[in-house]
Length: 278
Image (cartoon, rainbow, N blue to C red):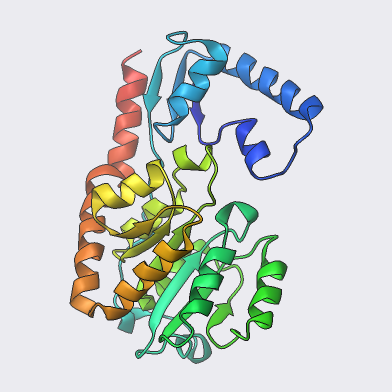
């Protein structure tokens, strides 16, 4: 029995404020420990998970191997003239603006107030932020944006099918990814990061720890620590000052890193090797 761990429990429940009461978290931790002890081999999607697992079951109790997320094959770089979006949505992506796209869950963990505040500080800069996704933080964000009079600069498009996301990525200049400051998030790499790399776009990150290191190691974009508003503002200024070719260097670096480490076939071949070694 091989277990692939893509979230740490109960740490994720605590970090996202899903549950705080110890009478809930303690049984969850016990159940998690029993599951870990009941398998033959543990795979982890993030390297930082290893110490947490060993704290629960003891060092060396089970073999633990790094096995990351991959990006699905339908995430691919496409040319702008291949985009199938309607005229209304295409018109949101104006050529004279830095088009910043965030894709995925709009939740508490993503700390999206930070990017809203950064756009507010830089409201005189030609920046447009487009959220493609949905989540429980959306109403709060919408109210904040309305209070700041940023409705023209920050747009919500709602959830879209995964196989349509290439169109939105193709029209973007930069893709944004963030997590708030928390020990669990500093060792958690969101799966969207692999998808961002796969579509050959530069990345703007507000992250700490392992996911930030991945952006730095791949040289795929600019990253500042989680909750660091000043760092995010400065990186946005840098992207505004860059021309297309300068941004494209980050995009190409990220795409090369993706093909080497996160392409679906490569990752699944590693899984095959892990299963055959038993």
